Amino acid sequence: MRSDPRRKNLILMGGLFGLVFGMIGLSFAAVPLYSLFCQVTGFGGTTQRAEGPAGPILDRTVKVRFNADVNAAMPWGFKPDVHEMTVRLGEPALTSYHAVNHSDTPVTGTATYNVTPDKAGIYFNKIQCFCFTEQRLEPGQAVDMPVYFFVDPAMADDPKLNDVDTITLSYTFFRAHDDGAQGQVSSLNK
Image 1 (cartoon, one colour):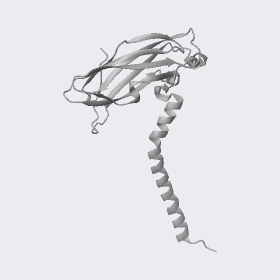
Image 2: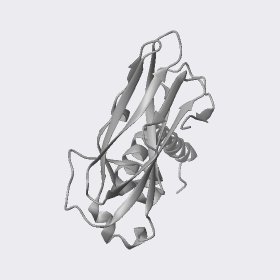
Image 3: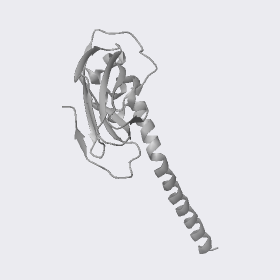
């Protein structure tokens, strides 16, 4: 007995359509899944979010450096109040960034952030941060934006981080509702 070629073609066509729709579905799920992966693992220097400090405060210290950048389309000045501080693992610390809107119109911005080295991201925990919400500044308005954080004491138990004595926390501000224009990033932490 011969198999029906039309039936084989229909099965092949159905399989190809299923493959195409599956790939389209995965493309829409890729960004949120990647974001979740980065948050859980600290991949790419993604920091963690915490409700409060956890664990003991250890004697081991780490230097935390602070960096501030803005997208070229963003008319803000943005810089850290201090460029670095030394904290003990598990010790909560508070710092602040200063932002000013240099334009004559209100501007709403949102900050992206990461830490380097990337492998330290999973241990850097922010309790309070301006990066969790959009920031709106009126023309000429200046604000101090606090960051309350700690470096997880579990970092001391990770042999891959024995060589880490400095962590850099870096923020970049973008217009929250940018019309699609992609500006260049310029450093303003002078």
